[in-house]
Length: 209
Image (cartoon, rainbow, N blue to C red):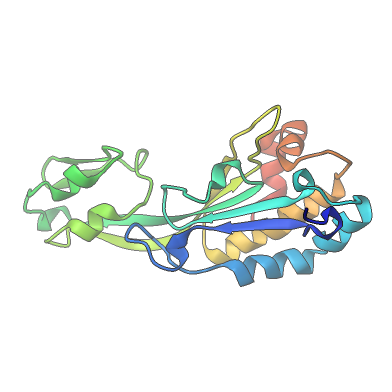
């Protein structure tokens, strides 16, 4: 049996897209960057001083997904990153072939005076840009959707989305999240519980970059 005293203060789950996946929007392995923020925050020492032994439900959970499929389960992690591509359009180049419309799982694209994109439905998977033969669709920018406060247990909570950020901004959010969590920490408190206690709007103000 694993020694509970030796459990780390966090878990980090990165999907296989960090190495190679046809669906990956961003394939960068962020393990070193994320663990660097955790270490500099003082979280490992803080939790070790507050909780002995460290059990699975005490650990701060981070998950990184390289595309919206979310195989690493970022929606039930304390802190999740989901790679996202902002799509740019050049409707005048569209030939009307319909490849992008057919591949879009969110039904965010339709043909009307060239290609049109409903950004409220787009999850930034970039599949449309990959299949467009005329380059009427392109990736203008990549970054991460930041998700906060997911958890399972007796009272599960899906993580809520803070917004779309660059990698440096996302790491800054993580730093602030850990700081706020430690400031309000008490035994048995999960980050999702703290979000509900403070109110999502107030919590988000504290952690935005």
